Image (cartoon, rainbow, N blue to C red):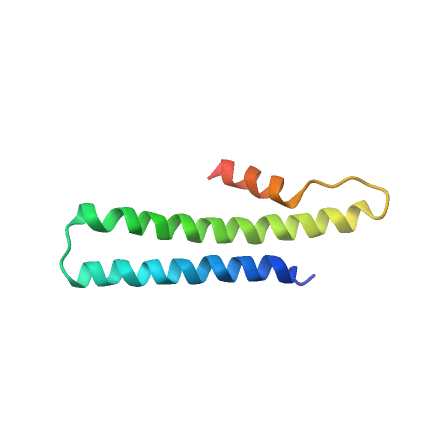
Length: 90
């Protein structure tokens, strides 16, 4: 099994840390007794951030796999295009 590209890992970590911060805000809002209509939008943002981090991992892994298969002369899909394709499925 191949290790993930360092740039992809850095991007996923950045996304997950951002989601962690947002989740802390949601927890604080719940502890303060805030209204459901105030809590749900940032909670949905956390969910989307986690999904995007997962899709980034998937697209990066698939991109590496396709590159390995293509060798020197084959064609591969662009990593950003792969990520957009996965996001369109969500």
